[in-house]
Structure formats: structure tokens, C-alpha cells
Length: 437
Image 1 (cartoon, rainbow, N blue to C red):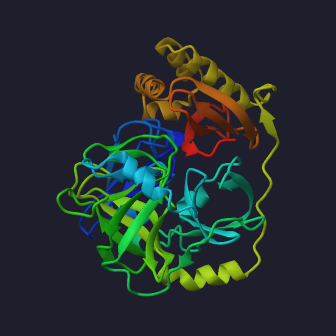
Image 2 (image 1 turned 180 degrees about the horizontal axis):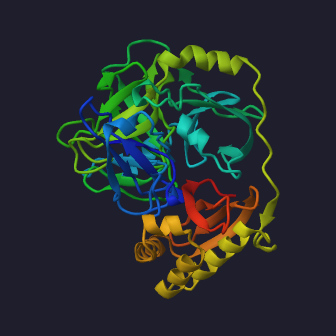
């Protein structure tokens, strides 16, 4: 199965990812949602990242493939998580290696790399799923505002292998004290030793992604194959593989594959998806990583950075929920009811919420009982949820920035309501981890 790594869940835009395995003409395509940090409630999470162990798998006819649009967040794998390491190596070594690469930062629900003093490179699916809170990045503790985002014109092509999953992000000012990595433009990637860097979900090749702590980790690997728009890597189990073998996980989407040449670092790929064919699950030993190839897009990259781009549209009014009230809108009332029900820490409260506010079509797709069980699991993982800010996008969409106190991780929830009567809740997209305040 092919999984984009950074997206959203069906009620959590955390680190889940939808995975598409590229089929032959007679094969069928399997779609899997990685639950680790997605954009829609996962099990409420039917879209990208994660919240629950990799569950939800669907088989669809080949005729659907051409019309499918893969969303991502992984995150959510989409996942987009921290690096997944060898099970027989200490995590501290991966943390130590990451400290050598200050040009990598968290971006939205994924990761980005400084490639010019005012430019970042990330995955197209990460840039496409930004929330209104994703308006800055940090380097060396300093915040830099985002001026604009440009997604590659082929980022959303229906044919997965023809897709160019890249985006560029322009900052309002140059980053100080950090040396950008260089753009790789040579056709010599195969066999190269690389370093992956990202703050997504952590775990190892036996367990797969486990949790979020927001820490940067780095791992090594070797380019296995080169396609027109992708380079691939295999997660080898010991004793094979490199000394600090690993791959990216949910939440690492958009992160770099770096090589070193002549004392300089070059970015040759950007974390995009994971194919677990032949593995025991996504992001485990014997799975295959797909990174968007930089060299074949180098002309677009340079042309874009030399041109002027339109500024980002300003977000709506930000409400500080620590001092203010929830907005008096349809989405605001439902969001407030959700957080009140969740805070009661009881199945009865969540059942009442689901029966009262969930859209009929959504309940046909997933029963109240299934949803309540999912929220029970999430509460075990996240602990209390503390809403800090919200931004309305009309009456039927509300973005909420919150902190999962048990995990110590910032998340964003996007409450989506029906655009028609009775305007009930269709889903909650969850992205995690995000940079927070």
C-alpha cells in the first residue's frame, strides 16, 4: 500500500495518511489511513495521519484509481512523525545525529528544509493541508513569518507516479545563523548514502510509529532506486542496513533526504509516502519509502525562487479561548460541546455528543459505538485537551489550536459541518504534532 505521510484524519488532522499502492492494470488499489497524526477523526481518521493504530483499510476497484485524490497530513504517516529507527539501536543516537542539521524545521503538520535564506522546501501535500495557524516557522528559537506558499503544478495529478509532491515556502525575512542546504540537480542519486531528518512520530522497525514528542531525529539509509519523480529507500532489518538505519514516519512528510558532497549538504528528496507491501505494516522493516525527487524539479525550484509570488491570504479573526468565548456560530457551538463532552472523560458524554451533533451520513459510515471507542482510545493517548485559540472560516468550519496535555503535543482540530441543513458535524480533521504557539 502506498501511503502519503502527512495529512489528516477523519476527525483529526494529526498524522495519519492515506496510502495508495500503485496497482497493475488488473490489480486493485488498497487505501489505508495511517493513524498517527492526521486530519480527520481517526478511526475518525479517514484521511491521512494517525490517531489509532493502523487500522481502516479499504479495497476499491481499479476503475476508481484514476479518480482518486490522495489527501495527506503523515502527517498523518502523514503520517508525518518522527524518524523510525532500528530496534537494536538507542534512540539517543538518532536524537544526537539530528542536532547536526539545523536547517530542518517543523512546518504545519510536517517538516520543511531551508534551501535559501528566505525559502523552505516541503512536500506538496503538507503545504496543501496548512491550517490558519500555520503562519510561521522557527529556527534557533526565533520565529519567521511565512509570506507565501507555492505548490508544484503537478502535485495533485491523479497518476501517483507522475505526481511531483513538492512545494516551496517563502519567508518574510531571511533566516539568520543557519546555513541553507543546497538543491541537488544531478542524475546520480542511486546508491547514495543519505540522512533523513524529521520531528514526526517515533518508533522502530518492529513496532512501527508509536507516539509524538516533537523532537527532531535523524536516520541514515541508501537510495535503492530512482524514478522520474521519486527516489526510493528500503527499511532493512539488522544485520542488513546502515549503522543508524531508519526511515521517516508520520509527521515527517516534507522532510529531507540529504547527501554530503565537498563539505556541503544537498537535498535530493522530500518525504512523501511509504509502501508497506512485503512488510508487516506501514513504516516497518521491509517497507519502501518514496521521496519526491528534487533533481528533476530543480528548474521549477530555481525559477520559482527567482520570481515574485502572491502573499498568503490573511486568516480570519483569532479568538483567544483562554480569555474569550467560543464564537456564536454553528461550528463554534458544536466545537464547544465537543470539548465539554471530552472533558467529562466518560463514554456516556461522548455518546450523547455523537448522537446529538454528528451528521446522519457520517453515522452510517461509522457507528456511534465505534466513534465512542475511538475517543476513549484517544483520551488514553492524549490525556486532557486544552483549547487555546480558534479561527472561523465561515459558519460551518472552525479551526482550533489545542494542546494534548498527556502527550505534551500541540494539535489542530478542524470542525467541518454540513453546508446545508441541519448543518451537523461531518468530521474533525486533526493535525499533530504542530508547532503550537
